Image (cartoon, rainbow, N blue to C red):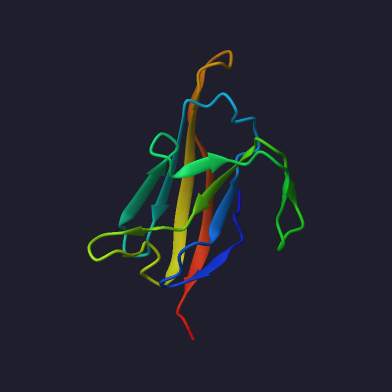
Length: 124
């Protein structure tokens, strides 16, 4: 699934929305891996409080596609390192993958889910 989004180098506080396309309310873990253009991987998880499951429907402004409540994940772009800097520190095309564990399903689901990409642009 595409995540048609663009951010700027150094940006923080904006929200990346990833549509899983299935009910995530019983997920015991969600993992979001973001691969930078240089190959470095940033990992954020539900259990660490980095991700939340969207509880209301969300409409993508670019595609006009609506993501159902409880079927998409929200990640607020944050910082890391010392001194803190935005994780979005390299311009180019980034790749992401959302992995989920849903033990309540029959059979239990523990699978790599959505694969997407987004752009990080140089600030003007």
